[in-house]
Length: 146
Length: 382
Image (spheres, rainbow over the protein chains, first blue to last red):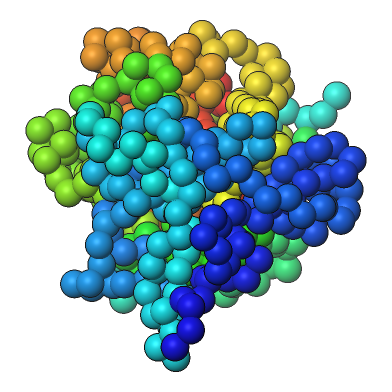
């Protein structure tokens, strides 16, 4: 068995010791998107150029997901194996706000404005038994107290 | 100068769970109730629009009402479906294309949060795979950020939900007719922080119908005509914080509710301070709080004091969701917005019974919002 597979191709540089999200940048108006998409949602220009996004930013909004999302489309653990997780938007300076799973799900440890960094985390195993990883953001200071 | 539009009659099939009752039967019941309310027969209806999520062809209701051959168009526009059906029916009268038009909504949902294929919402497949494609967590994030920015407390969210359950007790057509205390609401399981189970509405079943006519004809149908002064539908603009967004740009824009609302006030020629009673999309208690401000009914942050002071109660200065809203009625998507109009018409006629807003309200306001960033606003007045 080789390296774990990314949950989708073209989302983040992988495998890598310093993974980065793969975004797009509009050559006409400068808008940054994630993921890279065919056309610019602001001005309509296409194609977008590839742009590796900043691995650090600040938490802009967050919530918790305390119950399993409907499956399909959710392909993660369900039933007794489900573990609540947090989701948020992390603002990457000068780029965009990206929605991502957070490694910390305890509300008392999350606050808007805290510094976050990109992480690639286990997501599960696919039908072929291959380990799958996805992107997430973790607090830069894991030991931060509420 | 377009033709003014009056509401000739309204009808409702109760909202809730009705095992064994087909959706079209509920729809036909709502239409018959509206016809009886207006003193019309089905043959008087010249054009119709019907909204549904679960029923492919809600126009098939003609098999129960009468095959009169009228133009009958089905509408689906997310949680703004009913406002869209109403807007299109009203436009047929404004254009002079019909004297009498029907807006109908019906749905019969399974239990649990809505789901769909992310690709059909312009989202990549992986967005659903990893668990992001769910509306409830958007509402959690939006109100959590709003609370941070504008000083709204969790107690306010609980008060809003408790009010809507209380109003539902007074509404014989409501799904949830049991009062819940703020403590019970706060203690119910957390679903998407800061929103607990009892702060959310549920998908359910129901139907509602609104019969519109040219204003000049109103006196022949309705004992007390109510006029539809505005109907608007708007979608999201670049920069709005919307459901099912894998990313957001740094530049921010107002949501579609704000634009639909401004356009509706202008169309109706009224100001937010003129509104006597409002029905707002309370998918969750936080949505009602946010929508109070997005619809111009208060400034951001004022909700904390308004709710604590009881301003949004039936006897308050700005009654909101007097029939219990989505929290007490559930959300049959196609019907939800026409339930709001049904309630406003009763309130403006002064026939809302135990939940009648005192002081003879004359201006009513209704708003819908849903995925993927669509809003509808309607304004009615005596």
